[in-house]
Length: 316
Image 1 (spheres, rainbow, N blue to C red):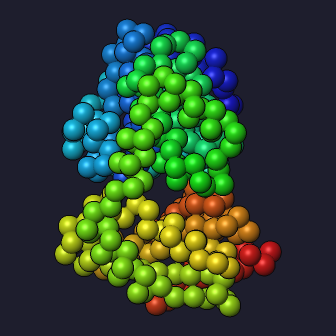
Image 2: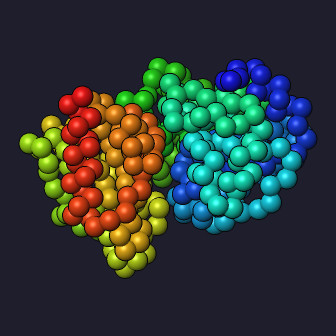
């Protein structure tokens, strides 16, 4: 069953000690939402810890007070924020996620694995859900506001993705009024790129191919490039969204090599193709216009398989 925000607030305020689990390869939404909830619960006198299996990328370390790693013990009640499935907590925390007391998430693929779930796939980011919860019992100070602004802005591409709604803008306005420095955060999160990022983009574009009368694209990011340039998650994060800007493109798939014949895919669509449904077919998931999965095999074969599946969905 899906709980209301009021029900979740009541449950949270009855807890004494809490561990908040974020998903692997953490983005701005999972980290910003988790730390905002942490600060709000600490205002209410709770003992709170945030954990993540993966290393925190430099871009988001302002949220973690400069910490590169936030691995730790899971004490007290377990809360999963922006974690679409138990496996997304990572091998270190998956068993704890399976026992989650509260799950807060906006992914349509979330099955509601927690004892209590607050899931709203119509919201642009988990940060919107956390804002609805914490504003009911704490003062939204500038620290909480900046965490939640980061959460919401990153999952909407700075409010340009189609998941952005009037409620998203109202939430952002509320956070700016509460002290979030939007100009500073927008510069940091959306208008600053490293040399590695630019070089990976250049090489990826050289690999870009068109399929089915220029309606679908596939491109590759080689593991050798990542290692050579010392690229991190920040450097790779936005690349998959760029081919979708090409006129006439219905869907794009970016293959990021993570092992010899293993690729992590980021699929972006214009809405005519359901990215979540296509990625679910390959064992992944996500949103209608942005989803991901993992595929194993030779790239030349995999790109054709993915292009065929995307085209099949387009012609349903």
